[in-house]
Image 1 (cartoon, rainbow, N blue to C red):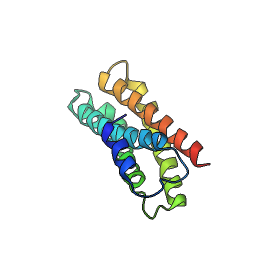
Image 2: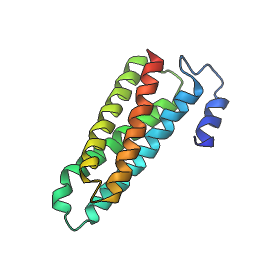
Image 3: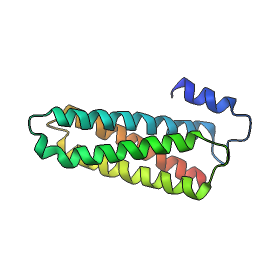
Length: 136
């Protein structure tokens, strides 16, 4: 776990809510890591000779990156938390990660960047599932 995510949560002056700091920190970290990895995978796909065959992968990489980044930012903001919106965003992030992982797994044997991306998406998918379970 990134030291700064946990440290910043430790410095928050109020109660973090119904979930443990570790579960929340793990999800925030996974979201930002996945956003970066999906962005890098889309860029790597654009550099491939067979880029026309990877347009679906590029599109879902970018969608997943945007949802993960937004989720990480919303989870980082604890003041004025809106549980319904937060839950919906985590669910959307989980769905995007699942779809992106499935797409990248189709290309993982041919493109190492897709294998790495699929792994990051699966980690984020699990972190989102863990946070949703903790919120239930």
